[in-house]
Length: 537
Image 1 (cartoon, rainbow, N blue to C red):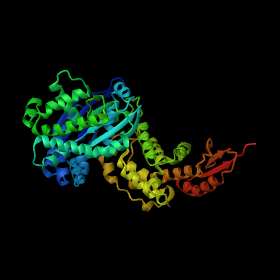
Image 2 (cartoon, helix red, strand yellow):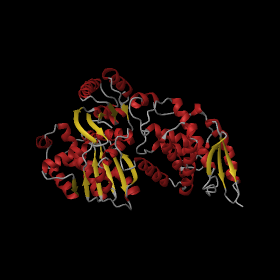
Image 3 (cartoon, rainbow, N blue to C red):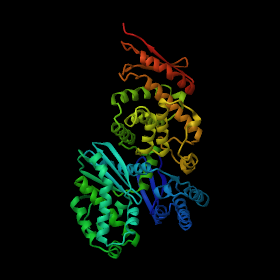
Image 4 (spheres, rainbow, N blue to C red):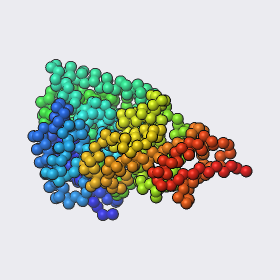
């Protein structure tokens, strides 16, 4: 395949960035230009809840300039994402429309889990280093301007990922209201970090050994550049002692000294200390021996996503397995029945694959179904009586890395209607579908492995109905939780989904439950599921 020129635009909390990349099968992803403009959108959002008109004017002008640069490079495809500052602004629908009309650019709001997953993809694009380092206990720390993401890996498996309200910009704005000296500010930041990490430590770090820390995001990149300024021989991998040495040097500097030595403006200088304290404290808490700064940005993750979805670059690391691993750990946390989930996943995937020409869904929908299977009983941890409603609330309240808010909402509704009468008109969606579509899904490669998809509220409701019908039928096949139909065969014959088992004992409970779920399945797919019991001998 020929070389393709791709552009990534990141509308962040503190700056707007344009990345230009060349992507090809032969050379992979090669950055050729980066343009950045500092604009503190987050300062307005986090203090007033809205982005001011003056900043919107400035933002539109910057994006117009980006469009000119993209044309000069003859960009053939682009992705433009906005993160927390725009996402949390009450007036973001108006701003996104103004950007579209005045610049011609479609900006998509992405959830925190999508944003962090993109950064994670950018790290994984450095395959040889990444795959080696995560074989031992590893934490990925992404300190952004609005929040911080902390993800744990162990032997190539993603254990958990959590978002904490520890963004450098938020902390700076908080301590700026406290009239005290620099030393006290640093102590207050440490106390804030320790307070937010207290529960995380008890839940996830109690018996886990962390050997490596990976620092990503703009703050990590800025800090690394400053570390190199202090120590000219500083590599991208450092020991805890290297970090402590830099921190001690930073600790004794005034803002003016930081500006002069590092060549940054006052705003950047004010963010350096909060970021440095967060990274240092996490190093101390985890006991990590090595700190790796791969030097990636969100734009790099956007380029990696595009290359992966367009199949121009093949990654050895399975990102789908990371999403599933996070979901499995979530199921484990809520005491879901592992044996039942395992056989239910087999049944659901077999049904999905066997009736593929009847449902018209794609590989991404298959992934959502697998996650729904894993989490379908998590609500029993709260209440056995109202398990479906509790499960819905748990899923909607828990970020799952790599999934958009809409995808999480689809899963939550599938789980809710697994044991509740289904009514299309009762499905209420929190996600603004029109904004989700206009934000780029129509014009950029969708997350479903390259398939382009235009969504509507009715499309989403039908998708929920299809996935619910499959989950219900699969669940009925293990009604006794004894895996009696293990090894059953499935085939579509004469407009029927025929499921055949040769289990030697009785399956009366499964047969009764199967019949109860068959009508809804037939209503959704137009084929009747039939369970045939062929006894041996």
